[in-house]
Image 1 (cartoon, one colour):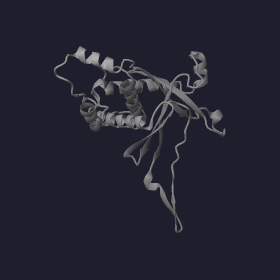
Image 2 (cartoon, helix red, strand yellow; image 1 turned 180 degrees about the horizontal axis):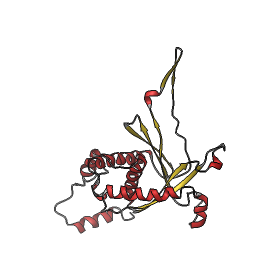
Image 3 (tube, one colour; image 1 turned 90 degrees about the vertical axis):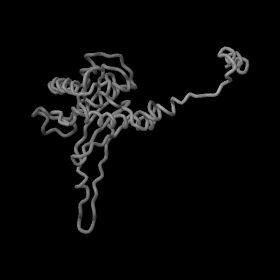
Image 4 (cartoon, rainbow, N blue to C red; image 1 turned 30 degrees about the vertical axis):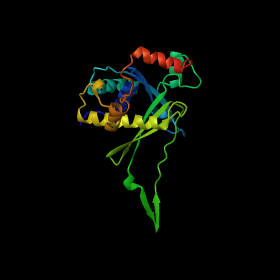
Length: 239
């Protein structure tokens, strides 16, 4: 599907839809790192020039995915115009309520990493084979850090770092499956309303419908509800 947008914008919008569908919060702030040298004064300096951008977007449940994508594209133009504004000064100016254990503006970070070509991994030095290993470094303490990597111009790999005090591994695997389902549904119909986009796998849908919803239980047909209730009270009076 052609969206006339960058890979970052497309994936960032999908990630925002995921956050909305899992939290039902429509006012969303997601951080993303920006590493640029936009001034000639810094060109010869050694070191990493990294700034963190706080990108705020509002999701309308009745809006189509394509509509949200266009909205976030326009937001990015404003963000890029101000990307050199130091994050520390922004926090100081906004003066939000502070918690030393959390980022002052957002708890979720999104990043698209440099493209990887696995076909170039193996090289030879004489009779020896040399293979490249790509290491993904952690960049801070957040509830969730979602990283996307384009592989061989054909696939997108998602890597999720998460706070183990807040999430179990199974929960994060479920989140990644939800994003995968979103991508499938959006690729079929990007004009579909956000509230209608599918985030549940077929396996999970069957589990919800048949396993978790299986509430059948045998009970005496010759007694009323209040009689059964009284008997239960007598059996377990302290519970």
